[in-house]
Structures are given as structure tokens and as C-alpha cells.
Length: 323
Image (cartoon, rainbow, N blue to C red):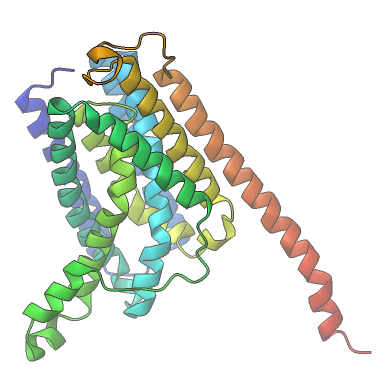
């Protein structure tokens, strides 16, 4: 996929305008974002991502568009999982609800800039070292298995290296002046990047095109701010979310290893010749698996939550009912 420099500049400029537009409109009169307003912005961000995908389909072809949509859904689902940590950060620093949108906007912008660095580094590694595919594949399988075993009931906020350095470099008076808003922005941006260590290799497992990788990340993060106000405090009800994400990561990891074997260039494996007998997973199948896993995970979580509510309701009624 040959992307001219002017297309890169136009895309980055357009994304910056979308980020700024929402920030200006929402922050023009600071207020607590309600459910209906957040839902409208979510629909807007989804529409922007879909229109961009249709543009990729029109100018680059259906295969690249399918890869973009698969990458977008993967990045969106993995980013939504990070909302749980955003809730923890906001709660720990007692950020007023009226300021949370601005904090998220700046934090997400920082995260996108830092993710851009990771994407550039990943693209460079992939173009020069074929063994990176094997490393990414094994890493994703490991992260997927760990995600399947993840339990989030005991999640605690710990300062990462970025926050610790910021606190050491900020003297007492200025520390009180800039805390907590700037600290929270830095926390959200840096925490998102730490947890992007699984999503970046995951999307490279779906497409090797840096342009598609970056835009999928950008549109996923753009929609993350609004969805925070819709489901940020309801994530604990998605009881099977970690299972679904674990399955997706493991699936993409296996796909990446199979693709690496199919196009093998390692001198110690099959004398450096490709293993064309190894099966590969196509883009359409990848998109179908990702969509299917997300749907099954969501439906199963909703059914589990409803059964749990119905099972606990009689017990509460019995306790409060007079005898």
C-alpha cells in the first residue's frame, strides 16, 4: 500500500481537526456529559471511522478496507478494556466529573502521540527483521493466555515510571499547583501506552501497513472518550470481556506465527525457504472471528448479569420484608 506523504499529512490534519472540534464544542460550556450527549458523540466517532474505512475501500481496495476494519475493531475492543483503569485513575485522584472530558481528551492525545512512536518502531522492525513476526506471535499468545486468567477485582492504581519521574522533577509548590489534573493526564496517556503493548502487535498481526495501523488506533482512541461516559462505570458487568479479548489476542498470535512460517526467511528453518504448505488465515476470516467473539462475549456477559440479578433479587426482598 503506497501512501503519498500528502495523504499522511491530510489524514493527521483531519484527525486533529476532529479531536479539536469535539473538545471545543464540549468545553465551550463546561458541563457534566450526559448519557444522550455521549451516545451522540459515540455514533459520530463510529460514523467517522466507517466513512474512513469506506474511503480506504474506494481508493485502495476491499482487502485493505477489511484489514482496516478488523484492526479498528481489535483496537477499539482492547482500548475499551483500558477504560476500567481510567475509572480507577479518575476515582483515585478525585477528578470532578465536569473536568473528566478535558482530562480524557488530553490524555488520549498524549497516548496517540506515544502510540505513533510505537507504530513507527514496529514498522521499522518488521521491514528489517523477519523474526519479529515470530516474536509478536508468541507474545500475543502469551498475553492472550494471561488475559484469559485475568481477574480485575483487586486492581490497584500504581504509579508507573512516567508518573514517578514527573513527581520527582516537580518541586513542592509547583507540584501542588499542577496536581492532580496534569498528573491524571500523564497517567492516562502513559497507562494507555503500557497496555498498548498487546494491541500494537495485535494489529500488526492483521496488517503490516503503518497507515492502516495508525488510523485504526486513532479512530479507536477518538471514540474512547465518549464511550467512557456510557460504559466506564458499567465495565464490571462485562464479566466475560477479558475472556473475549484473550481469545482475540491468542487467535491473532497464532495467525501471525502461521503467516511468518508461510513466508519464512529464517536461515535455520527449512534452509531459509518459505513453508507454503503451512495454512494461513485470510483477512475476511480474521474480521469474522473478531466480530463473532465480541458478539458472543457481549451476549454471554449480558445473560450472566441478568441471571445474577434475578438470583439475588429474592434474597434482598426476603431481608427487607417484615415478618
